[in-house]
Image (cartoon, rainbow, N blue to C red):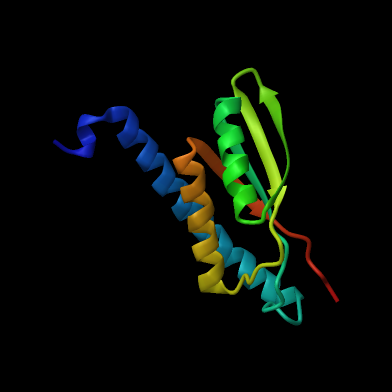
Length: 128
């Protein structure tokens, strides 16, 4: 028996892996751009995060898990008939390359565990 025997789970894992790969590539571009415009890329930043969920129950589970690690969830909003958005912010975190990619992986994993999709992240730049 393999994961391919469970098409729904297999598709979810493939979606998770593709999402993670794309976000890590985006992180590289973001860090390159950030280093062009900011004097100190090593300065910790608050990161906003965005998730989607098919159910309010799953969104609430994710919210609880994020709050356990000190993240603030602004709220859960019904964005379409079958989709809820979860938006929040981290405390200050280190976004140097490896730490940032580990954070992205973790955010994808915590979403996957709660059957939610990590849609991305953002931050305010401190341009000088």
